[in-house]
Length: 209
Image (cartoon, rainbow, N blue to C red; front, side, top):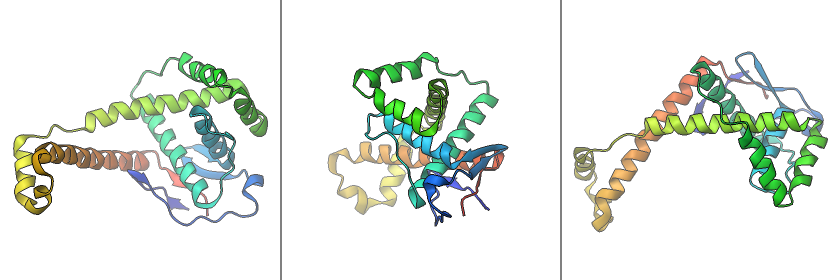
């Protein structure tokens, strides 16, 4: 087993599955004592596709694509665990039901039903999983806002003086562009450190061979 290391973009490395992935429902990852199964990854990916109206919603992944989905789900589990440890308020349960009604109004109810039938889960369970994703996204947004720094004039001038050739081609908008670049770089660095902290705190471990 290898430790799941997530640094902004989730870690990707070689993945081998034994037998047909459609027939395998073993453990794919651990976040603390919580086991993430391969089917959990299939359901997660299918629900994400349903959210944005992609068809078909049910998608059976394998190899590197499946591994990336497992890592995203592990990240979601870590974020939710951290949110709950800080008594972060759950989104209104009505939000997931609104999402379902929206996609139903677009004629996508059969896609949702296909997820329920394929993975043998109830509508309540599917909505619970969607609600969990909404909680993770809400908490992550708050964290990103907190990690986004204020860039000072001295920060901008220092970058310009250290990178005159790069800045020269930016023209009149150089200062605004540099400010945006510095803000993005520093926020990403802070986010990477936070995700690494979560990975260690919650002992996130990838179990796929």
